[in-house]
Length: 395
Ligand code: ATP
Ligand code: MG
Image 1 (spheres, rainbow, N blue to C red):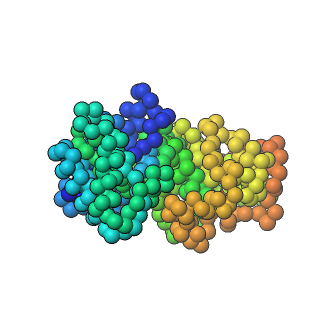
Image 2 (image 1 turned 60 degrees about the horizontal axis):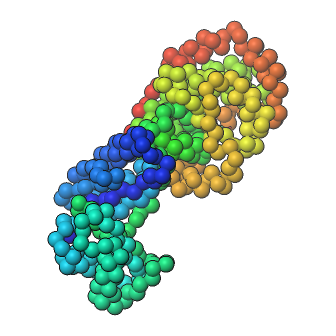
């Protein structure tokens, strides 16, 4: 019998009591979502503190594993053989055929790790380990036992059905999306913000996003790149409502009215204000940015303080202490990097001053903004009124 199910491992330590059910419900929901477009007939079930994905008929194995590798909360994906209890000798035969199928003639060290969750099983775990170990040694002369550092651990769990597995494919860890509220990601076309969104979502937070678009200074392709990045993150987070805000008029007005060295900071303050507006509409409880201390002029401690001043929601900046190289590593690992480095301009590069302030004085920034009094409210309202919302599903 082949592996027709996956045993899903998740970290249980932090989730006792009532929270455990919320966690498991959310995990089951996310697994179903992830498998929705994979070829095959999958059903997800919960049993005795375990989650199984069962399959019927033929299915796309690689596609299923790939989908499950995007589900936060999963620490291990184990292709498992589920067996009825038909006595120990029958179990020995099944284990032999399993080892032969999965490892063939390979040379490897192993140990058997039996767990008797059903206490009425006639053999104790230690006896199962010893007898099954012997059987494997005897049948496969290329193998040897190593109880401390085995290359292969053959797990045999005696439950209602017997679970037989030895392969654990790592999952992304974290907590299932949907267990920790929602936040609004300021998503640009760069490397940093997709990683920031990924990291917060990994803590169980659902994500919506906002992108500030400045046509004709930024192209349709730049916008499409952001949609593509949202799509990549949505594979992990589930559907994202991406708000595309036309920011051109606001940027031009700031450009006209304010000293150019302060442009970036003033612009960023308006981005935050608008992001907060959409966060309120979506029930988001915080904002997320890809900022990291000192990376550029607008990310010095002084600049961050000036940007932060206009926010009333918490602003989550998960990359704040990361070096660029560390950010790039995550970006590559999650599959965003190739898209992030495509060379389309984002709106900030058009309006950047030659010598932006690196230590903005908040009082001066506030004074700059008084010069926008005449039109800024109307322009903000227009930006809100003309927002385009694109829902990406990740599938
Ligand atoms: P990224 O790599 O994410 O583009 P960056 O290094 O280019 O970041 P900035 O341009 O200073 O840094 O932007 C800082 C943060 O502000 C970004 O990580 C993002 O969260 C947000 N942001 C910047 N530009 C935009 C935009 N056009 N639309 C939405 N959010 C933006
Ligand atoms: Mg950028």
